[in-house]
Image (cartoon, rainbow, N blue to C red; front, side, top):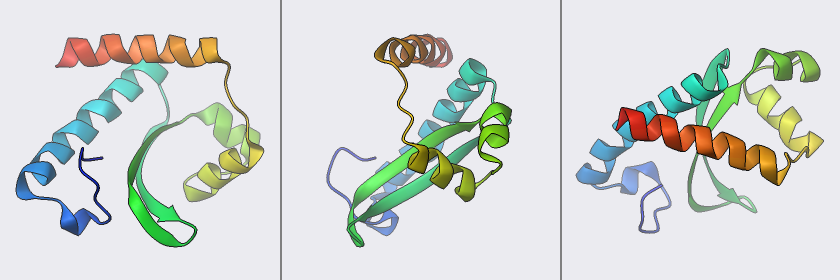
Length: 108
């Protein structure tokens, strides 16, 4: 998301838009290299209480194990994972972040 508060993609400046594509590509590539998913979902969520709040881009690995566990894929998988409310341990998050940082550092 941009540093400044933005409600809609259409509110992005030309410079912000030009940065967005390469940033999403690099992030998706790092997630692919780090997590080895079937696919990487890139989504935009902007609502809080049914009112646009600010932009959130979600870059989510869609792993076969999750598709099997939830018997779902695409938006239904995202919903099922959200509803399951399974939170990884702090150590697991740190481990993935360390690998992502290394991958992004190597590609940038």
